[in-house]
Image (tube, rainbow, N blue to C red; front, side, top):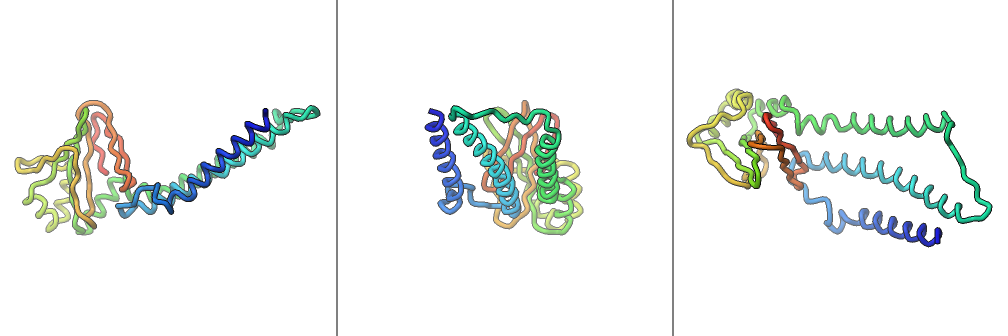
Length: 221
């Protein structure tokens, strides 16, 4: 009986890994990237996936081997409790891996999440679009700047940075849209996200962007 369940588990595990490996070629996942930083996010995702998959397979193989071994009448349990060297090794390895992953992702997240990086990009004078997003129960409302205000940003990057610092001040002729974000290809888009009630989350799979909106805070993304 032990052998049956061990073999069944092995078959299921193999099917999962094969389907995961061919999924990108079949365009099952991930969604097609639609942002400049999406490829960097995908690289981090693959690196973390391969790392966790390796150790998952390693531990599950050891588990299955021990299940098969336990079915023998002469089998004896092997204990590792009290082996300080072994416990140090299997604690140190994950710690080093986690630190390495944290270090390699700093620049990627900085370009997406850090307000100082966003301000630097705006200062370069590149075309950009800023809008405010208000999350509330059952709805997201997005406010776009008026045409006059938007044109002024293109002429004066310093003014754009000041507007960034003031969190996009509201004007009478701003445009309000419910549940949709409209922009165009190649433009830097900055959303000032906030919530009107409780915590909410926005998620754009193709942009590889997910952000929680927290009460009392305005979060740029």
